[in-house]
Image: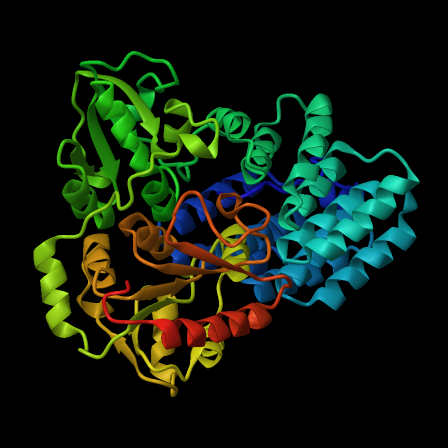
Length: 519
């Protein structure tokens, strides 16, 4: 779940030439986007670049191509190159300059991006509010929440901020772990933009981070399902809400967001079972076996092969469960931990494969690599490298075990420090990962789905938490009411390194005090 940043929907004005959009622009953009989103990335990229080359004077096409390449593929160097061409041809095209500044910041050329913004501020003082919206959003996107907040404060002192600036102030406060202060700003923004689902969703996240669970989960459940434009037949069923009578009725709960969200919220399926519901879970293949093992009274289907059937009364995204269950305070969170189970046969199999030396410590250092700009920026804010975490934690008198999958796992090939035992090539799904975790004495992870899995299994787990903490972990504190076995280490600046050194020091103490059977 992510808070939503806003810049005004009103773009700075451009000169007439940039506004002359040929009829082919929308068709080009739709086709190019479709190719990329269907996984035909090379074809989509080729189409974008060839179109720009074929129509070198068509700024509308060029800007749309740059936006697609940056937004969907995070190829910001290409995006910058295309936009520089537009700004050179049309120095008065303000929208192109704004897009260039944003692309430079996204490409981590912070100085270059802010130089473009400063130049625009000087040339177009009547657009300063709109430009401030873009500057602050770019800062927030790249993890400079404190700097963004300082700029926004200056703007507030100079006059009444726009709704987009109010939203960005609130976002900055949330990311600075001052979520309770953010809620009134979201309230002000919604007074002016009462129909904004994005702002309402962001306010719900701020409320949750502040511990206002009743208000937060109510607002959170008012969102449209965020399924990345994927639509399934069961989404046409009535959406299950708090207070609906489910006794004797068939209910579908489906994966909406990340694996970690499903693992976090699935504990509340027991509330529906206790009310007499016949529950079917529709989730990715990686979760089907784990959830079948953990909830034998629930039917579990793989999302992509779930057949259309009659007889269902309700459907709901799994993250709606806290609202459906009426969670209003932390005391309402169901207590039983663990609530997920590994297959005992798998646990025994991995026990035989792992080194005998104890303690065993599992490591996860990054989210899987994604390509959309928003996802890339979120992953950068929560992830570290193996080199960073490895050098901070080692040497330690323990067996290190890899739990990392996806693109970051490739960093093992370059790691030359303390050996890290790796069984993840043998892992088929989350049930296998759970079986490995049952053989570990401690898991250390950034904010990813394996962290939730370890907590749901009741394994000792440490979170190397990002500076702009997720709502689940609150504004501060070392513990979480969601996972009693979790210990939180909080980064206080953009760099994770000081926090990782704290984790390393704590690990030495933990190892000194550890005794067999203590886990």
